[in-house]
Image (tube, rainbow, N blue to C red):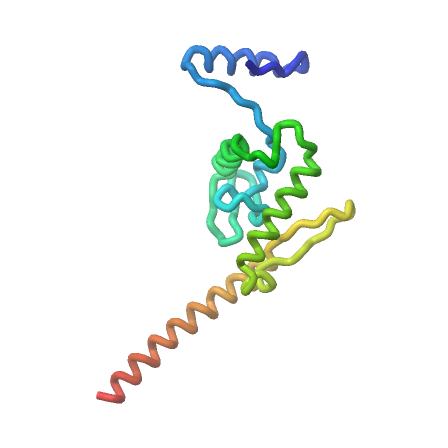
Length: 159
């Protein structure tokens, strides 16, 4: 049973409780801190939200509401982040998970991400300039393309 108190949200709580009773489902409240800023595919703070779009570190675009909903669903089973955990502690946990994820990408990490510190001394990992990211991808594609060209040329010459 949800109870938002007397702060104007009680009508929403009443409606949710009525619908859940009618359809036979349970309502479970979770800690929603940073759910709109996480990449739901990896559970990391490596993407960027822009209006209705959430852009992952790999360039994949998700609908921001669906991304947040997936994060809320995942939060239901997250034993490290209980409902009433302070948002600052939630951010620390998520940054640590993000660091571990990025360490698994160690060869590309320094090329794609950099640490940013805001005035409040909190640190986040952000994509370097997109231009650099696309340059790296283009160079890799060119390398592959030219390798195929040289293989074809070698085959023609050696006939």
